[in-house]
Length: 510
Image 1 (cartoon, rainbow, N blue to C red):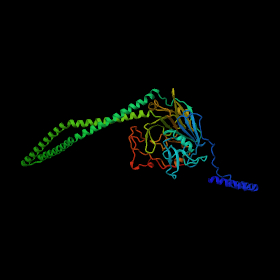
Image 2 (cartoon, rainbow, N blue to C red):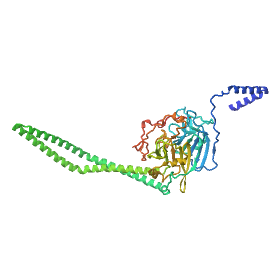
Image 3 (cartoon, one colour):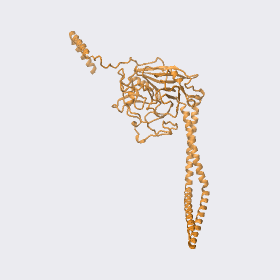
Image 4 (cartoon, one colour):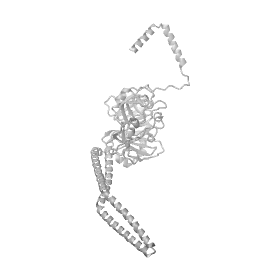
């Protein structure tokens, strides 16, 4: 009602103006514009990128495999196995708060997220890609970069996209326009159909065996504890006799010294009597000790055997759990990252073990050196993604977002360790990926992310200005060895910090 009234009043005012008045007003406006124009040396206004309209491909879309954000064109494009399916304009980070270019994946979804830093600001249909606050979410779009590091999408588009993506969906943020192209290379994983077909049954069998060995290990541990408990009184009695025997031996030694030092017949007789008594005591205690050991031997041997059996059962339990873990992980797409900076190969697979903050644990048990030919030469940043099965294995695409070798030349320089290939290639599934980059893993990478790789030759204000996310330990044993801390097999959670902010730093909206 207010807007309609205001419009009506304004129209009436125009009607009352005489034509000369309108001419005068126009001239005044033109003069004002000229006098308000910025000087020639003033900073240029932000150039708006070419306008991108929201759209969808004219076909039935498949499952989204990746999202590519172009900072240059301020747009996001969603791809399935057969090409693009959705696109929309976005607003990325402004100067000083730039959205970091690089390779990411969705680590958390929150339909109705609220900022804990910016006045409870609304970040609907949030798809988090770093735990320190970089995300894709619905927001206002002024037509140019204007956020504090996040990628704002149209509200309706963000809602439409939210239910289509899953944790682990690839998000590529490119400085310029980039798109996946069909690609093949002998280095890429070639799965075996027989291994893939057998994987579910193998995982089920090994999981059952792991459960059985866990139960057996507990039973063996209980039996060992009972045997030790039953042998405890015998052990205490033996220790008491051994102590008494030691004291008797010491008394006999004193008596022998006294006899040797005696000068008179009377002193010698007294010393001899003491020696005989001490010797008799030693003999008596030795007899008692031998009898006690003989009587206790069976129970003590049984306790020792039970303890050895418990140790063996624990070893078998660990081996079975590891085998079951590997078998279960074989049912998941695998992501591999090769860094020229560290000369290492990293493997990540989602365990789907849920965390209290909404994230999930990623297995990170494989990290090995890798051979890169001409390691001092830039290799670029390339993302190779298995998009679908074929009768010969997998169909791959490649996306390049950083200067260096072309994708084929980059792969030509890599020699993948055969033992790693043997573990991951036979059961490689669609949505598996191989990433090659000059960059190291970003510090935001931890056990609850896949990979975070930021291009260091691009502005990173949006991520640099945020605090590093805490590497929280969560208290459970998942049997998967899913831990990025060497020598440990589980995550540890401090119950004194049982609140949402313990798991993530306060997040920014923009």
